[in-house]
Image 1 (cartoon, rainbow, N blue to C red):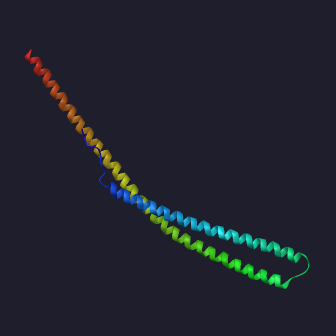
Image 2 (image 1 turned 90 degrees about the vertical axis):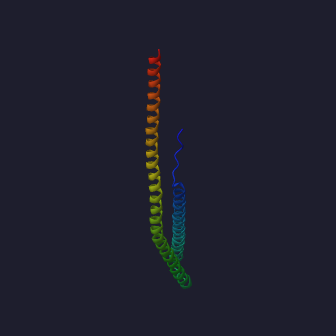
Image 3 (image 1 turned 120 degrees about the horizontal axis):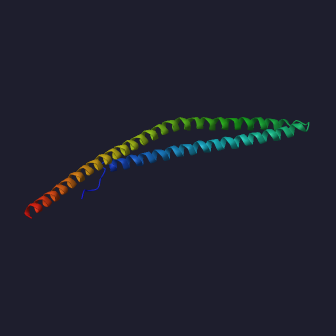
Amino acid sequence: MAQKFKFRLETVRRVRQLEFEAKQRIVANRLRKIGSEQAIIAALERERESMNEETKRMLSGGHVNIDGVSRYRVRVGYLRGQILDAENRILAHERELKAERAAMVKASVAVKALDKLEERQLAAYELQQRRLETVEQDETAQQMHRRVEHGAKLV
């Protein structure tokens, strides 16, 4: 009986698969960071919007509170700064994400190349095994034919 097919580069393929999975985790982590920053921006925007509504109510009464308006301006300036900082962090994360995705794609290509090589080697192995089986079957058929002919001559 023929021995079972064994891909000689299985260890290399496994290592490359682990590298690919590590790069996937890095990309996922980067996406989580971007999502977190986006959530921060949304919260800051909501706070700024509520401050706008509060200030409108305060000014609609006809009485202008200079200290309140001053505090509003300072707080809104602070919120704008925080939003800009978060947007800059998102841009930095997106630049890093682009490089990390490229590395992940490269790792994926390496794994797929080894998978394709394994498929080709398996196909070649199976073809070789079929040829060997055909040769063995032909030899068996010839031996049986010889026995039948030799047995017929003896009778």
